[in-house]
Length: 78
Image (tube, rainbow, N blue to C red; front, side, top):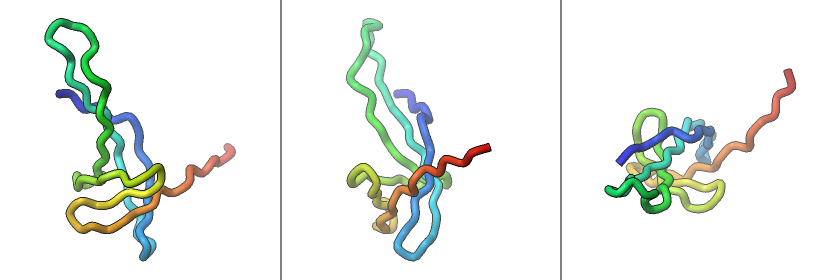
């Protein structure tokens, strides 16, 4: 199974701590070269801790049970 980094974002807990979350897609190629099952999306902190997705903007850290909320993307004009 191969995991490919497809995105990253920041999320914040209730106490204001910011976490860098990486989004991966994992896929298992089939033996006959035909596309396998749909990729599975997983999340991890930059330090490697696993993260479970609750909904579009809410996540929970597996080890500690802390809920974090995705920060809105900022569109900075250059």
